[in-house]
Length: 386
Ligand code: EMZ
Image (cartoon, rainbow, N blue to C red; front, side):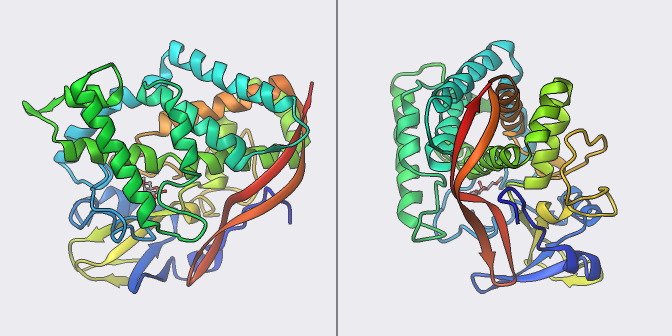
């Protein structure tokens, strides 16, 4: 199997039953696997709530044991959710500004040129983690030096080599965020913390806890997901030199290429909801208080929606993938993630002739009932210049 291939572990269950029952830390979760059903459940936020539970529970695997802070807005329901999004959306859409794009491009070109001079570059911890962290300094509008601290946390803010859910890492992130909020309170700048401290919803200032929840999500949600997307994209172009050539010949494909890669990689496998009523999905009974999961990764390979779902077509025209979720909770960081990937692809086509994989170690996500390759723990490559 090619390194860049991400097999679909859900095909059989999706076709046969449409759901998969998994065990997450002694709690049963019904994963919804077909695109249509995933969309329907995401749309029905009144029946399938994101806020009507303890912090961390809608994530699969559940993070209730490692954090008390509610990630905002993803762990809230309307009407609060609507107010949070109205406040946050403009800030998180800044990657559409030409100046922001120029800075992001400068950063990516700098990292790529540095990599082109090396005999061997480790992509995951060594390169993508830096790229993600540096790009995040632009999104938060904080000094570039902050990225060094974030790089030291590794590729996931809650996971470490020894533990899928690492308490001490989660605590370190909380401590860091609270300190930054206090610094901004004492000496406001034009970073996200200061902007949030200055913001009001219905005439009321945001609490420290709310700001903490927003920033926690910003650090956690866009980290391993973006790092996996970058690493997988590099592995893909390494193993498909023809695809890199095609993209070079068709720069107008960059947008469809990003959507297609993101569909295929589905960096976040799933996200849960809590049923607030006794109901049914796919003729499968769900009781009040039970957890379902919306499996983006499975929906993206649904052959009733996508032709040749297991193939990457960089110019795929109809691509209603769910990698950034669906409905009111559509990923807040999607604009930034897309801009990072578009800029990266454009930079690869102008600077890189080919990429050679020297060493790779898969990153497999495991639950009792399935395992899914999500990317790499390690990916060493040599970039060849044009
Ligand atoms: C959560 C999730 C994204 C979670 C939109 O939710 O990403 C996961 O990697 C994090 O661990 O906390 O943010």
